[in-house]
Image (cartoon, rainbow over all chains, first blue to last red; front, side, top):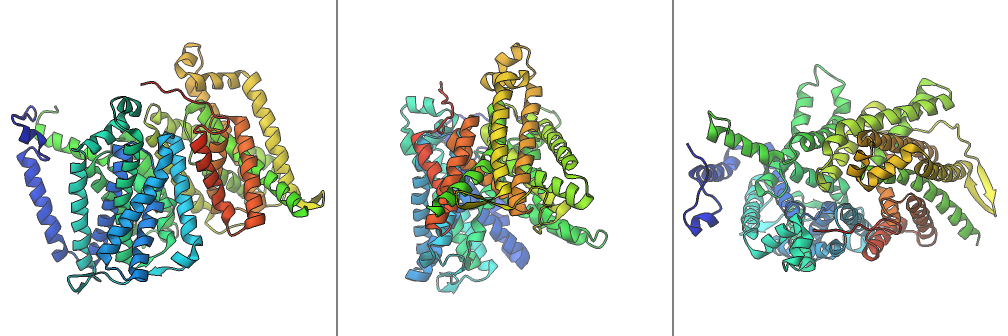
Length: 347
Length: 290
């Protein structure tokens, strides 16, 4: 019977994974990730790529909201910056996709830090509204600076090339997206074992106390905005390269809300939670559509109200999670593990 | 000069409508520290319910108006009881998110019942153009101005004279102290939500009369944020003055500069003001202690 996890050396204490069960689960997960594209058909690969991009964006947002405690409603705007920067650098300057993606991330990080400046004086609600204005301002610039972005016209981006191979199928793109997602995961998990990550968490828990302990609030809050926006920009840039097309409709306020919902339903301040939330929120509408199609025969009215059911379910899921499991899917996953670890006792 | 007067009038009346919608926000924030992202949907529901009662069922409009207010009050109470009460004591982000979820749910319900095609609003408020100082303005817009000013007066009396109003201020100030003085905090929250829903329904009615009934009305909720932040989230005069400033600003930029700048300028002003006065023009500064 295990009564807890105890460490007898510093290496073990610092390890990301402590138990055999965790290591075995990781190996199974990696094998599943590698094997998946060889067995899945095109439909499932598309879904997997969408989930992968959402995971990168959700991890980015979680760094800011979940770990640093700065509420942001500007996710859609920052993704738009990433997507348009990547698209324009590829189309106008003829950069290879990886260079334009990295540069786009850097540009988004700068824009994110710029809109993060009010965070020094604002908190909670007021910051949420300030980031909401970032979203409105960015989208306005994107739609009105027609000379640069093409305004309401879609920006067409060519297929990315890697090692002389055109990445134009879902199968090829899978490796790119999930490769990047794993790099982002590793970097983020390790970020919170450095002084920067610890400073972020200190700011979240009590910023005045953190400042008294010598954490430079201005520097670290801006840094959190920059790092978070870097990954959000990555998600935007990958959307551009994956869809081959960039339009502003893909980055409205609804997207900001969707990503916030992902990290809240997944679990704030947890990388695993970002994964679970991104998966859940991407697959929920798909599942509802399929259910609706399956039941169309018996209930013809479903056809017309299906979009509203999706929208309503989105709202309902958020409300129910916040009322009944505020810590999200991550907590449910933990409870599940505890249940089996401690079985047959309840604790 | 004629253009200036015209724009000023348009701005003032638009501002009055914005202020009316903002009142609901401030009321809820003042008593329960919750910012209601579903306020736009409350407007939407108010507009659609009265549209349904007058145009589809065919009830005489004053009766419909009273029915709509009653339905809005019921909605406010239900929302407070089922959704917001479990959120007491939860972090701000959860409260923000739960009202966002609520807005999505309410919008879905409205679209499922009435569809998404914009409809003409039954004309029982006169909207004939009126000439003032050489500028023309719809009569319904003037009514909006009158109603907004009236509401401000009523709320002022309510908060300074009535038992419930004073209790509401006490709850906003300190919930525990209010409880120990025998005020039912739960009852006060229910009051705040039902009054907010009712004012939103009235606001929705006025807006729908000017722009027609459609899902776009909910977007009005977004336009109200600069107003409440500008005035300060917990100040009723702030909501009115913020509404008028934003209304005028939108009208002037729309009239003199154009190019859709009037949609984004309020948000730019918002950021600038927040940088200088983080609690808005009239908001109460909160002193934080560790």
